Every structure is written in structure tokens, then in C-alpha cells.
Image (cartoon, rainbow, N blue to C red; front, side):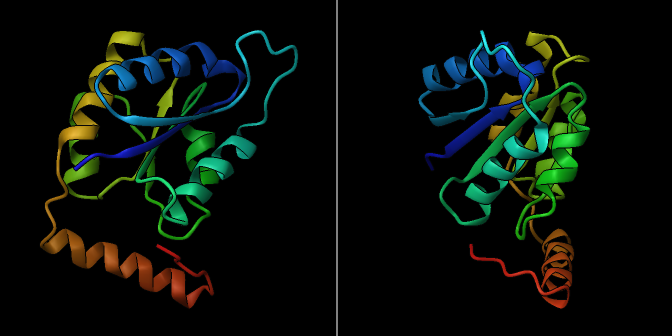
Length: 157
């Protein structure tokens, strides 16, 4: 399966976003990039970037997304406001694997200030290749969807 990816960052993750985009394209992924230019003069607010990426995933326009800010936490909070989104900050290889196996994570949030380039590449590679286990985990994801319905959120994907 060929994944359509969308990757975004605020001003603190621009350089990393550009390197990851290049890396992913070299691996054959279709990648849409969103966020400020490397030479942007003013800061970019992470909720704006997270909303753009999460909205795209929620609508089914892209399969998965990657968000980069200083800690990954702010992006995660904003992205999870959208129906059908499972976003989490991932800080190592094990959490990357389990985020896919158990949570079917569709938005990976990375800490641009806390992880080096090599660590991020390893995390992304694991996150892209590990499948969702389904089974008992599927039942739990469905409970999250039910919560979204009960709260009046509509999942369009």
C-alpha cells in the first residue's frame, strides 16, 4: 500500500520537516508539506499547522500525518480535536511501534527540540512500516469513535 503523507511544522521544526520530507520522497512516499519557509521572519502558531494536517487526515485526503514542534505536545493536543485522529508525541522506537500496533496512530508528533535527526528518521521508519494489530485494540478504537459521536463530532473518513 502506498501511503499519502502530509507533514507540517511550526517555526521550530522547519529544518527537520524539510529533511524528513526529502527522506520520505526518496523512499517513494507521496508527501504534502505544510508550514513556514526556512527563512520565515515570524513565528508560526502550532495550532494552525496541526489543524491543517489533522483536517486533511480526518477528511481522508491523506492517509497519515507527521507534525513537528518543540516538544510535539502542543501539536498533539490540537490535532486530537478532530474526529478520527489518533495523534501522540512519540519519543523513541518502542513508542513508535506500539503507537501503530495498539493505537493505529495516524498522526505522529515529534519533538524538534528533544530528538536528533537520526532518532526522528528511525521513529518515522518504524511508524510507517509497523501495522495495526487490530483485535482487542480495534474494539478500543471503536469506543473512541463512539465517544466522538456522543460528543457530536462527525468522522468523515
